[in-house]
Amino acid sequence: MSVSLYSVKMARKVLLLQLATLVVISALFALKDTIWGLSALMGGVAAWLPNVMFMIFAWRHQAQTPAKGRVAWSFALGEALKVFVTIILLIVALGPFDAVFMPLALCWISVLVVQILAPAVINNKG
Image (cartoon, rainbow, N blue to C red; front, side, top):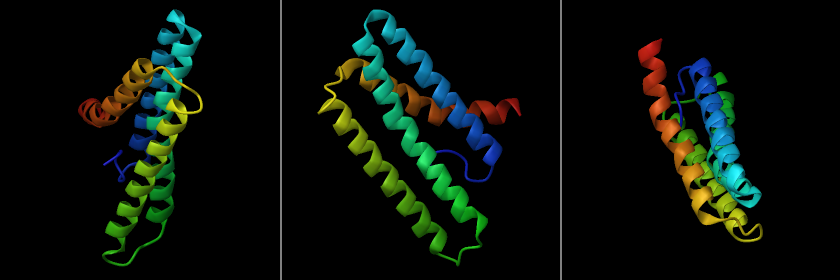
């Protein structure tokens, strides 16, 4: 699961932590070379933007009281959309923009690791 569907506040914190990770890693790679920084930025955006889209989708559906069984379909549809958008963003970054693979992959993986670890850290502090 991307981030907690139960707490909008926690989801925002996780998305902000992901954004901060993306910006910091991109800036560090930009110190080596501008192309590396942009490649890292594209990789981070390929992980972060689909999560933002998924959370907006989830928040909109959470406001309604869905019929039983519809929650699973809504979640599956949101995850499928998220995966599709991620793949498209990575293809565009590696294809037309000719991004450098290593910074793109490292930033993408780092943002995904934050997605997994941040909820546990936030729950332990709060």
